[in-house]
Figure 1 (tube, each protein chain N blue to C red):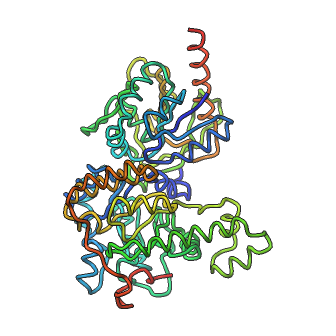
Figure 2: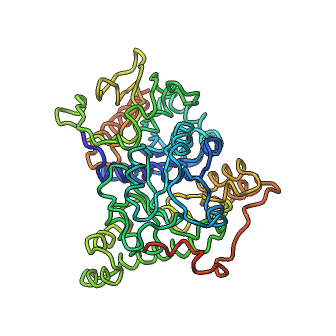
Figure 3: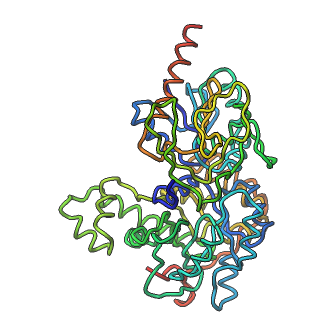
Length: 295
Length: 197
């Protein structure tokens, strides 16, 4: 019997495809998320919009909180560690969470290096803004990739940019002549083995989700049509006026992203409930941006 | 013969690809109209609580039950086994009740206990099957008409009752196609039987 193999670690992400992973800060939130049809929850002390407002240093969540969320639901539970903070990751593995998100939403612990994720049995998801960043994370052992849309902004533009950047780069590699692949790997700052694999397969070797800025059912449908294999929703649910309805509507729109009549029904089910307030990312100061953390 | 893979959520593409490697024709099933086209159905891996809710919301639960009771071959992998089961130990979780087994969810543990196991499956011959278990359920109880086809650590992990097959692991994640072929054989037998009738 072998645990923690690449197949087993990437495999759990494959089971989450087509689903919605929701940020939750209490066991009650987690139960609402599960009831709405979430495929997993991300256990956090504060949702990203509040981390943004609160300022200071954002660290791994308290163990009691994560444990109480693990006890509240039967779906997988993910938790975040700071970029490069392998000791936080060791603690989360010891606790037994199902996935670790090495996340730019928390304050980075190391401004040069990410965690060596091959060293862990617990699989990791990491953010990426483009194909090179995705491949560097996969080379470090990430078993799942997500876009790095500006968390807590309620603004989908960054996630769209990342999904398009990754998709375009994969399509370019697919038609690139073989003799160009070493130079392409150099330009991407990525291992040539992974670049060659993408050129051959025409897709990432791990599951790709969208994260950052999803606030409405139509946002979810947009990202799925742009090639996301599933959706992370952070502040979009529990910063909306009606979390139960938003959670369910985003699940429905993710499942049937290609059927506008069902997405319409999901939008209509929200009634007069408002989505979370949004931010114009261009007006954020450099120091407030989370997406450029780690690269 | 057209095989359907339930495509509400989960590892749908992996099953479609595995079926293609076996030269079977397969489509994703998202609506009752898709279901009406297929001769057999696979319930893939995924999250069982999510998929049960989506089956209900989008009107697919009842037609799947009716078709399966009328003889349509059905195979559930992991989540699919839970959805097809009679009931779930300790949880008030609805299921479709297509095979007379009681399952225990996440029975082998959480993700850190997910594993690749060389599994003896006598029905497939003497070569062990490389079975990938992910937060996998096991079979806690099975009815008299259910045939247990494989066990791990003393618990059932593969079972068949007539036209319904269930595995608590994921053959679609590996390259060994023997269980997909075994299911296609059930489909072809069922096809012959219904033509004869």
